[in-house]
Image 1 (cartoon, rainbow, N blue to C red):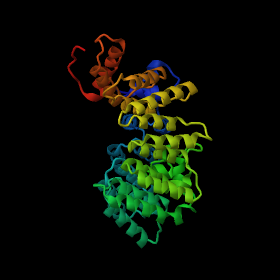
Image 2 (cartoon, helix red, strand yellow; image 1 turned 45 degrees about the vertical axis):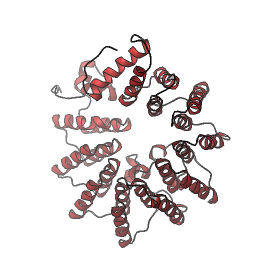
Image 3 (cartoon, rainbow, N blue to C red; image 1 turned 120 degrees about the vertical axis):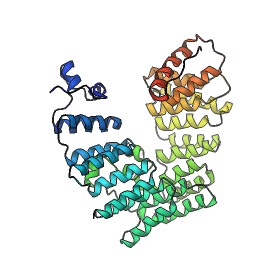
Amino acid sequence: MCRGTSRVRGEALMLVVQRGCTAEYAKRNYANNISEYNTVIGSLIGQRRGFLLRDVYEDMMLDGVQPMRDTFHALIVGTMKGNRLQDAFFFRDEMKAMGLPPDVNLYHFLISTCGKCKNSDAAIKLLEEMKRHGVKLKGETYICLLNALATTGRTDQVYAIVRDMTAAGLGLNKFCYAGLISAYKNKQPTTEETTTKIIELVKQSKGWSSVETSTDSGENVMMNVSEEELYNIPTAEFVHRRAFINRNLTVYHVAVHACAELKSKETLETILDMIKQDGYSFDAFIAMHAMRCYFNCEDIDSGVKIFEDYTRSRPPLAELCATLAEGAMVGYTPRGMQLAQETLEKMHARGIFLNTKMGNDLLLAAAGEKTGGYTTANYVWDLCQNRGINSNFAAVKAYYEGLKEREIPPDDPRLVTVGHIYDNLNLRFGGRRIRVDR
């Protein structure tokens, strides 16, 4: 069937789906029935290309293909993974218009999306909508709400959910305590009570977290959504990494992550001692964020010690090496920049490669150096280029502006190359600008 030419990203979708058919047919048709559309949606979700899901849906409507409940669930899971709240509510409204009322699991995905987008008001409205339509709340519902509200630091709202759970005869599990810790971490302004409450909550959680097992629901497993991702726990991206995290340490993970964000090494050391007293060893996530905390406090020696202690009996992981290099750059001291450079060189020599996120984070950090020869930033840029890593707009902009501040000839090959990449990205993401002679 020949479709109209109004599709915004037909060619982009074809590159994603990569169907084996003639070029002209492929350009116009990447799916013809609900089964094929579901396959396309699953492919896009797997590749974290949630920004294309609405285009797929619009093509589905143009083709007269009727989406099923499972289709909407997949679409909303995709928007959740891509932090696209407006699209999530669009699909919710479309679902209702077709006579398919959202069920409790779909509301969980919507509430989780609110949390990822730090919109606690929208999460509360979803709760009211559930009650209005007679949707029975589950334990998961309360935990989703608690963690979604925690992202905005509204401890009053979070404790209101705790009271509702208690009234419903539900106890607090490790994900509830994780949400309470996150709420205090995000509460503004930060006070002495913040770190005190975090330590208290870690202590209170011990009776629960040590005996819990995973309770991932059947639909969450089918949709490849872990509890950590549903509840916006910082370990979500590492759950499927073998031997990276110990899921019994969820509360400790959130607490150590909070210490790094709050730059409180005194609180960190108290929590690290508690982990040891409980008979646990540090997993990669705890080591990584303990390093971040020390580096954020400009305590290079303690950060390096955590790295050395962890890697003494284990092979160095790329994430820990990147954390060491990025953390050493905090403050841009001569010693720190030298450590960062040496770490990156050792990574390269050992065949430990950066992924796209690490490369962009390191480039953005290195580009902030105002003095010196810009050696580390140039080295990170070269590593990313050699590995085919596409740097994002923010990192390229920072690097390009840093290059222009140096005494470099206007026709320098590096400056020219970076300038062209910056111009291309600026047209797409930064708005048009008037070109000036470099």
